[in-house]
Length: 264
Image (cartoon, rainbow, N blue to C red; front, side):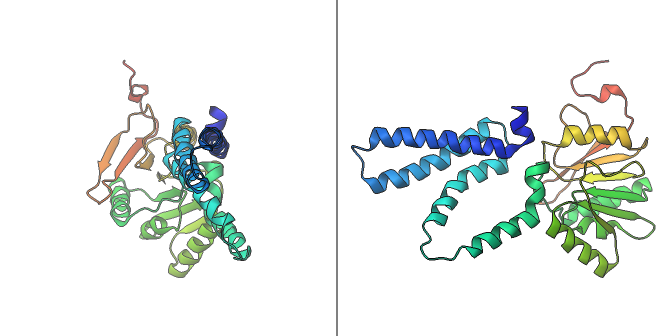
C-alpha cells in the first residue's frame, strides 16, 4: 500500500485492471440476454464507476478518482475517432506533460492561490516583520510577485517545465520575485522566514519533517487547506473567500505537546 501511495499511477493501473475483470465477468454472464450495443455501453459505464471506486478504496487522492472515472471514456473516444490524425493526441500529451509532469512524481496537482489568500499572506509577513518568503510549488508565481518588494524577498519553486517558464516570464516582465525550477524536496529553506505550500494531503507529513530539520526557530510553515496529520498548528487563519480557505500556521521549534492526541 505504501508503494501505491508513493507511486499513485500504480494504483490507477490496478484500479483499471480490477474494473476490467468485473466488466469481462459481467459481459460473459449477460452476453446471452443483452444486445451487443448495450453490453458495450454498459461495460463502459461499469468500467468507469468500478475504476473510480477501486481507486478510492486504495486511498488515492480525489483527483485520481476522477482520472479513473474519465479514463475509460477517453480511451473509447480515442479508439473511435475514425480518420482523425494522431498528431493532436501527441501534442496534447506533450502539453499535459509540460504543465503537469510533477503531479505523478510529487503527488501534487496544480492549485492556484486566490487573491484573498495572497492578501492574507502579505498581512502575515507584515505582522511578523518577515523578509524572506518561499512558495514551494509556486505554479504561475502570482503569490511570489505579489509579496516581493518593499524590503521583502519572495522566491517561487516550481518543477513543471511550462508552468515554470510562464511564471519566469511574468516575473521578468513585472520585475518582481525570483522563480527557480527545482524539486521542492531538494530546495534549501534554511534561511526563510515563511515557507508557503498549497499542495495536497499526501506530501504534508514529509514536508513538515523537512521544515523542522531545515527552518530556523520562529519561522513559519504555512499550508493552504491541507493540515499536517497529527500536528496541532500554532494558528489557523480562516478566510472569508468563496473557498472558505484555511491557512495552517506551523511555527518551527514548537513544544512536543503540540502533537495532536498526546498528553503531557
